[in-house]
Image (tube, rainbow, N blue to C red; front, top):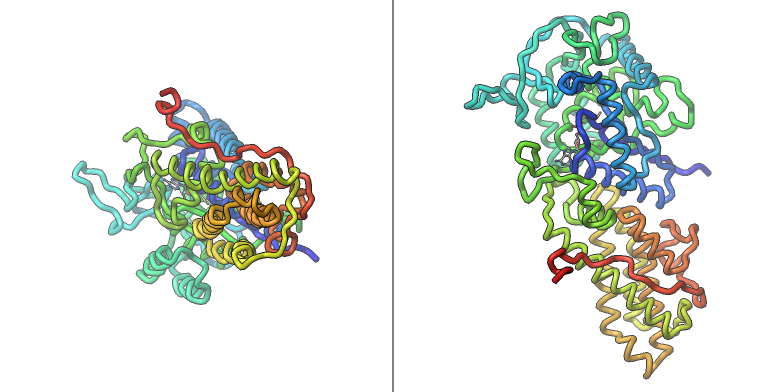
Length: 517
Ligand code: ME8
């Protein structure tokens, strides 16, 4: 029987500069979801890439004195390097300057023409190069500095030119009906409400081509025009899924299960994109999830403030898995979050080193010394033992329920609840005292403890791939023993299995001045 498919995408990022922590955050969260679904038996297709056309790319390239393609190639590589450092398990990396993508973008354009939704007129209005977006005058504000800005703060400029338009105004009711019939289409709910009221306020037709610069995909039949970069960019999601006539292996993934994006680009994904797809008679993605923004100690990160966090530095300083865990556990996924040193150190030392690390280390060291270095053979289970095993066995359902709505923090919260329970159990059972008084009972307590650790480690893999692997190695689990199918009572640790010599998996974070003191 074929496995159910699961198609997840990140935004394709603008390679007009090097990636920053916001990009890293989206990629880490998407990667954790992709890994979770793979371990849960799905046939996952995970797409990321770069959005290489548009005025912003052209302008930045001019400033740097290189061609837009050179700029794109250089920074697209910087994104790939970061994804390698962050262990992002993507299956395909799309660049919108590839041929396969030009073909797809022109094909969706032709389909929208065939539906009668594209017409030629002239556009005059406000445009933000930074957002690559058009804004109604009422959405903009004129600053005291005489500069007019859109709601996210980037300057807008007046644009007047011949342009093709997409009949977005014809799709308002259809979009509202879709949101209504599919309450999970836009998450979280705040974003859905925002989009719904934007659509209810009335949609105007959308300018979808430009003539005043040429870095883009030519409009079929009228190459004086290039496509508006968002028409081009959004299409990447179907290009990679083999549109218009790619191979069936790829086409089976559409419609996407989830477009993961930041809250800055909801309108493009939840209004324009579904309208384009409806017009082109292509199925809509199942979900658009817009996560929140990351701030540095509550402040917006910006180059001019000088508080932009370099993701490579974070990995260097804290270690990759600790950083991945921190962002996914600390921030309620969907809400804005903050990055600060004290909080990350606290997570590393409390959750990882103390709670999970020590639990594994203490139980495994006792086994090494007192149980011939083998998985101990348990005796009859007491109600306390049963309670821990039951809590561990219940984790998969809880994790799935949380991940059905991308509540990554709740899935991790549930797993660490069991880590906490198991620590309390271990302390109250005092296996070190039982060693002399009742070794058989000690063996049972150690068995129950490492069985809980087994389930925790399997479930921690999507978020901390390398550390979980080490932990599962310490439990001598075979590769086939590491999927979610092996959770619950279905395949408990086998008594008598030889275990390697235990070693620490989660080091404490020591401040530099403490380390040298
Ligand atoms: O918008 N916190 O690309 P982009 C969290 N090319 N996430 C952040 C963030 C922050 N401070 N800053 C950026 C584009 N992001 C288009 C997308 S898709 C068809 C085209 C993340 O390079 C977040 O995912 O400006 C946001 O949506 C994305 O980067 C914007 O990346």
